[in-house]
Amino acid sequence: MQYAIAFLLYLIALRTVQASDAAFYVALIPVFGVASAIVLIGEQPSLLQWIGAALIIGSSYAANQFCRN
Image 1 (cartoon, rainbow, N blue to C red):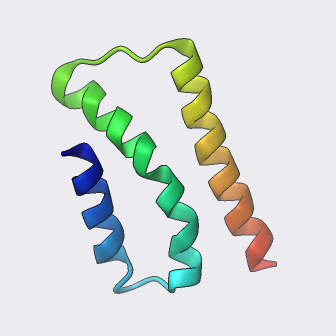
Image 2: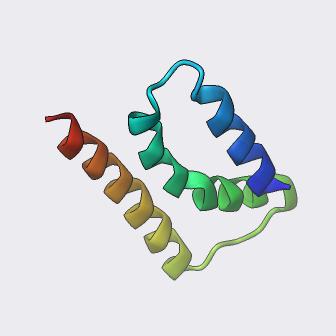
């Protein structure tokens, strides 16, 4: 369910953002899944999962900034 919500938000965002910009955010779908599991069912991610989420967010941001320049 968390994947479906994240992908739905991505598809809605495509209406206002160029597809080339939105492509970088597809990698954030697993982060949304983990975040919603934390909020909805009280999941406690491990340190390795936090590091993975930070790497995904950081790399998506860096790739987006790199391609804009």
